[in-house]
Image 1 (spheres, rainbow, N blue to C red):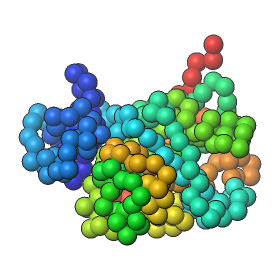
Image 2 (cartoon, rainbow, N blue to C red):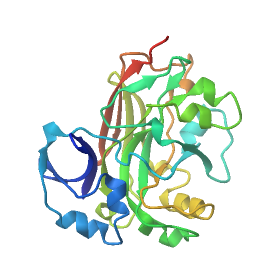
Image 3 (cartoon, one colour):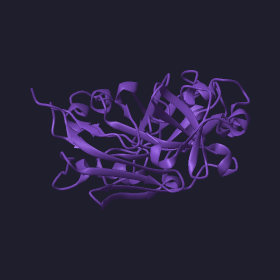
Image 4 (tube, rainbow, N blue to C red):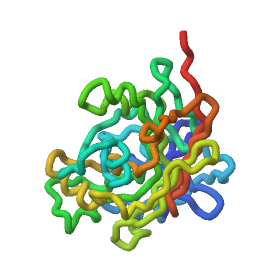
Length: 279
C-alpha cells in the first residue's frame, strides 16, 4: 500500500493511492493514521472517501510533524571514505526538527547565511508502533513503511562544532515523500533498493540500500534502547558517497538548480532550490 499526506483546501489529509488517484482517509496526516490503532493498515485499506487525481495531488511531507526525526551519519562505506572519517563502531545519530521538512515537490530554501548547501540522498523509514528495547530479530515488525528523503546539509554550520545538528535542520530544506510504501510490500525483509541523487539531471550519488553499514533492524534495535520510538517517528538512514562536499573542488547547490532524489520502488522527490531573501 502507498500512503501520502496531501494538502487540501481544508488542511492536510492522509490518503491511500488507488490506481491513478488518491482516496482521502479520515486522518489529518499519515502520522494520525499510524496513531489510530493497531489495525491502521487494515483500516487504511478498507476506507473509502473523496478522491483526488494524481494531477491534483499537492504533497506535504509524508509525516509533517513527527514526534522525532532521527538521522544517521556515516552509514555507507563510500561516504565514510570521502569524508575522511573512521568507520564507526556504533550508529552515528543526530536529530532534525519538523520545521526542516518539506514535501516532495516543494522548493528547497538555500539559507541567506551560507552558500555551502549540500545534497544527501537517503532511504527513510517511519515507525508504525511503539518500540522500546526491541531485539534486532523483531525490529522490522515495528516499521510502518519506507520513503524517500534528502538530508540537505549546510556544511559550514555542520562543522562549527562537533555536533551535526546546526547544519542539518535549517528551515525548509529536507524533502520527504512523496509516499510511504508500507513494509508489508517487502515481505518482512529489509529492502535492497537502488538509490540515486541528481542535480540538474547529472547523477551525483548512486548506490543500493543494501550497502548500509547499520541496516534497518540494527537502527531500530539500537535507538529503541535509548528512547521509545513512537508511531510516525521518522528515521533517515544515511547517505552514500557522492556528496558535493566530498569532491575536489567542492560543489554546492545553487539557486535555480533542481535536486532529484530517487529510491527504487518508492518514488522520487524533485525540488527546485530557491534562495532565502538576503535582507
